[in-house]
Length: 228
Length: 295
Ligand SMILES: Nc1ncnc2c1ncn2[C@@H]1O[C@H](COP(=O)(O)OP(=O)(O)O)[C@@H](O)[C@H]1O
Ligand SMILES: [Mg+2]
Image (cartoon, rainbow over all chains, first blue to last red):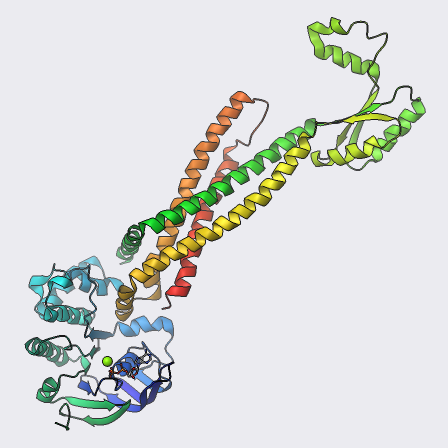
């Protein structure tokens, strides 16, 4: 699903965010990306959805080389990737329903399709009773579940989650993780960067640890850190 | 579905236009003023041209001759007049003929002129026509230099004044139009920039969700087009009604002046104004999106 070959990323301000990264994530995997702040986790995520281009190396997502991909093809790549961020990124003046409908409107879905699909996906994340509320009227966990519903409404092959529990309390975080596991069980690949060591330790998934832009550990069924 | 997408574009454009109401009004106002200037200059030039060409066909130069010229000299003079650049038709009017014409124009009061036959004070003259009205002043100057010519008269400078007027209207009109046109484009660009700025988070979300460039840009393009077209439409309405009422007034007050009144020409001018509004709006959005919305 995701292949990186000798990928380095140097930002224009000369910060070397990633250095010679090689990794391979299979379809259907659930992978945690851990490491201290500034290690390069977000940069890696941005390379995969082609928000940034690598300075060196190859990035291949869903069989396509992102370096060779033309700008006008990028939207179609993004439609195959569901993204979830710490700050939810909901549109504040749209209701829960409208926020999710928007993801469908963008790709040209019909009214009928939107009316069918949005309630179904909201039911799946347990938000069916809050369908007409605005983001500001929701708790953090509910906002994040709405964001997850939006991320999966187009049936993506990959979910990229960048510290999705960063603004959530532990119980809410666990609910979100159950949701992610559900989604993963249906075959969707998930790459999630996180600082939530208890989650990583409990879930026993593959863990890739970055430090200073290099992979210092990549193990199946790993824990957050061997240092504590 | 395409129809939903189009509704979405318009809804988003309208939201931005209302959010930046003051800028919207300012850019529309600038467009309206520029187009009013453009429209009235064009109509003025068209009308002056028409009036000038009407005058042209009726305009002739009268070359008054000294008394007592020999027939030989008269014939020579005719050839010399024909030789002046631009001159096409030359007719001799004998002093007797001139007096008859004068009596005719006096009508019932012709008896006022009785007694003049014996001592006709009017000179012989040549009436001269030129190929075009704007050749009259220069030809007149040349004719004055000819030997045996006493005086040269023509339309009392009307033609010169008219032509000078179109000249200045064109220059100042173009200049004002250029300045205001640029101002209008820049104001629209600023309006669009504000809209982009107000929506930068939303734009980020749209890109994350896989929106195409066209989808992201279209509401903003539309915003500029709506400003341009609305401004154009207002200018067109003002000019249309303004000009129609001018036509009516002139027809009543100055019936001998024939203004441009065929609908074909007027609609062409109005259509061009609307088109110009559209172009200004589109240009403003395009410039703004090029600079502030790299996708
Ligand atoms: N857009 C950017 N421009 C310049 N430097 C950046 C940019 N984004 C991140 N960085 C730098 O790259 C390094 C890695 O950042 P990031 O990938 O955000 O790490 P993490 O997500 O693991 O905290 C940091 O030193 C950060 O300051
Ligand atoms: Mg980060």
